[in-house]
Image 1 (cartoon, rainbow over the protein chains, first blue to last red):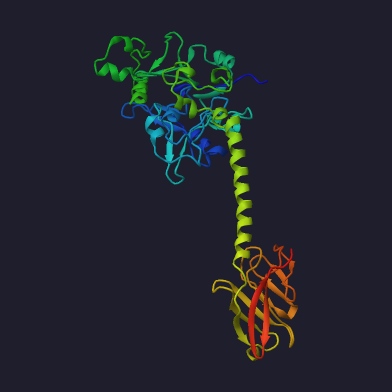
Image 2: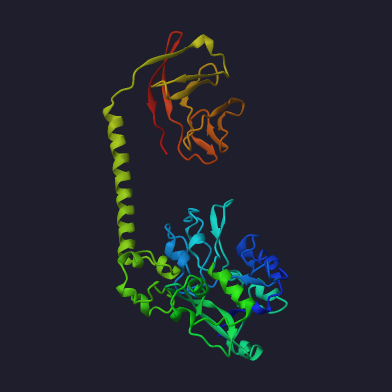
Length: 220
Length: 183
């Protein structure tokens, strides 16, 4: 029995080389389409990029809103691309996902999304993006390995979008000296609209403009 | 099966409450694949029951068709051709007993006049005469029938072509009935 491996995203380490985007389309389950999104955090002020893969939520919003019962999660907790015979290309999942992961392939009339390279991870290989990432912004490995590699970071997999709380299979690296109960992605939005302080006190974002922009983007 | 107790099921409702407190539709449309593909004993029994019922209905349908055919009585006698318009080795297409049932009349030699339905007994493609080799040929799936008896020789058809009984009265040829061949 191999030790369980986890997916870790460390946006601070992303250098925007697009290797993951190219490698993603090589994965057999994606039929030649790249399923990873490389987003600019705030392109006007920073070249910082951020790779976005599916977070594989325990309560997947995409599947919750699917009217055709097409989005399913396999027993290992990986939310799969919509089932072709069921998907009606209605775009509900595309609009609903808080992380903005699903994309509609209108040629196939099928929602396709990151499935953590299911053909590879199912046989204990690493996903394509994590295999090629030169700066290890995307890392697929064991928990112990990550503790040793990133002693100053703490993997976090609890997110909050307004009232919605999501626990994900994929971990986001956060500063270890600023531990938080959850990553409040919409906090920046509520703060700017004058919301209560209880939401914003959970913010991990201090005066770091880069992180600040990152979460503004995710909440947008 | 209790959804919470199954280690393969991960679904957490959006309110993060217990699965048993959720509305029924959430259990009816599960997100986890093992639960989605789970076939309950009741569904399986229903499938078995309906499938066998369909087979029973099919058998009754076949039996009724046989009864109807017998109840229809004797087929009409119809003039289909003149003897002198059919030289040896020639073929004529006619329709018997209704205009929708096409058939072929073949003259193998001076004394042998035969008529068969020209619908192949495999998938109802029209058969073509190949009298030099003494057979009828269905081009759809390369089926062959014996031109003298209508029996299948090769290819997918397993039943002989229905033969049409003929009566020659002077110079006229009449169709008098259909003889279903033995399998």
